Image (cartoon, rainbow, N blue to C red; front, side, top):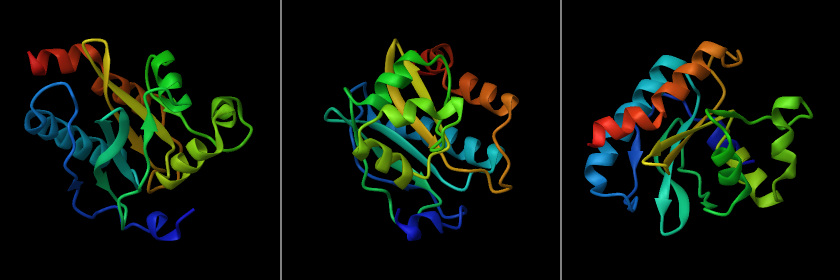
Length: 170
């Protein structure tokens, strides 16, 4: 894993890359996603945060926080990561050990596991609109070193819920 990415300070400004999301005006979506990303980073004190959106069939980071260099990762719509998130109701824990919560990671192809490591991902939180996956928020470990609590995971589920985004985009 790239050591420079792991050593991000966590307080660097969020960077935007140009990308289209295929769901409407990118400017409106980017504003909402930046707001949610900043809120998540502030509330949860994550060392790293990346917002991945659909860019030509590949989900790529368009907003990042805590990385020295934006990770050069992507997940196809058919990837094991996105298929897992389609089955999940809320955020998915990413564990690279053999614990029960991380067993799904070991079923992924090597390049997808490496991409998750490059993102420093501990949690993947899907954001859905009208039944479609709008974005995936990847959160790194908490600055305190603690695990994310059930309350924090519930907050992520609420922030990513379809109803919340459908109302804002209506």
